[in-house]
Length: 439
Image (cartoon, rainbow, N blue to C red; front, side, top):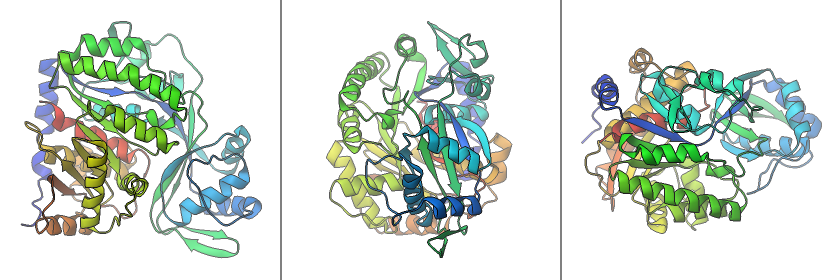
């Protein structure tokens, strides 16, 4: 059976879902990180000049390395750009950051999966509760919106009510467009896919400081919690620090589940700076979370770490990769989101319309790609005019002839060949997924 386009149907459920939240007093909660994104405007000439001046070796990147100099930046970034890859990498040199800000035009946006997800869901009209790690005035100005709540002691406040502010945590982001061209050692390369590289100069999130007041509020108001979107572990590189943080948060999640068994715990993965830390996160939290989310690049990497070379262009291979990750970490289910489709793979979940979450996640992410902002209901309605991805539709057609070991739901995305924005698309998708998790 061919894919049935239910986008309009599910978009029409959004007002009822918002009303349900407002009447019940329940909310979607988001933890933990926030930061200030420094957007480096795409400038092929500026990047080609930096590469010409600083590239000493062949473009390459190895797992776990950091950007310590402009030579490192040129080698690593060139590799990502000419291959159309996305990712996240640590920069240890303030001089590199200053050089980049001098070389490119810059803009400042809200960053962090927690902050972006909460903002994206709130843009539709949902009330949300979120945790802040960056309390700078710059970040708070993005979050000072009706319906976005922070925790102060044991009550909720708006970002505008914060009395103490910190210095911004800056993450530099370079977006590159499909079809763009750069010069590398006298050869012109055409970029095969629009993507972005996040370059973190960030010492705060290496320990993921989680405020006790936020955890206490969540536990004491667990009955008011629909879903809990968890993220932010990826910057921790010290395994002993991570072990301590996971022990604290595992007790926290157990308490919430005891007080509210229907609270849905959703862990969104990311590019981990230390893959051993990633394994520790999965192994520790797998018994507590309901769904693990990731993009296709993360699934390829995870599968490779487990000894399987996954072909992301082959649906049977993707399903094999999902099964390997799910069974290796004893997960309940995995959500994978890509530019062409999103998919749930795992055990059946009672009382949850996964297709609704995948569809609205796709629509919200596609709208951000199209407009460059978190979409309103009207923005999402306009995005319905975008065509379905041909690859996503073909994968949906193939799925009916396969016999996966688990429950599978696949929804083609509304595809945009030349997106206006490639930043925060995964975070925005995750926000849309939360809508279906309100039991």
